[in-house]
Length: 186
Image (cartoon, rainbow, N blue to C red; front, top):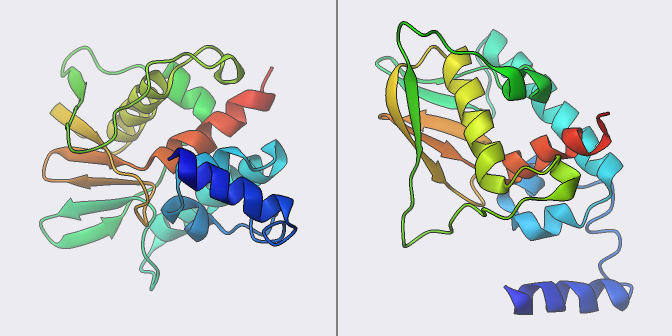
């Protein structure tokens, strides 16, 4: 990872990479790129990508689309595009029904990256793990999923989050973009 960041820094320092990671970074590229590169983007760029993600998810949930859904759900009839989170404030304040509690387990797979437990001041003191948990609860409540759900960290995937066979797969770039909306909020 250090080599990747060092190579990227050298590339930008030599003037070759400035336009490659400028505000023209597309949402699709942001999702499949290493999250560390996304976090070096300007806050305004990350916030614009978050708003674009929310808008595209709303559009995709309205009807059939010929693009890869940002929030695919595997249903008996096949994959459908679900709507994304309403807004991060909703994620932070989500209340679940006491009648049918939802248990979210952030799964640790030794072959994959772990969710970071380090609190980040710019994320209002939340860690990546806490923010991922919050987003998972919000999405699952919105999609009306019940029971125990395992949440996996799936970096560089073409979707923000996917629900497949009782497992919610979260792209850490999605978590990072969500955090950008926290950075400017009062």
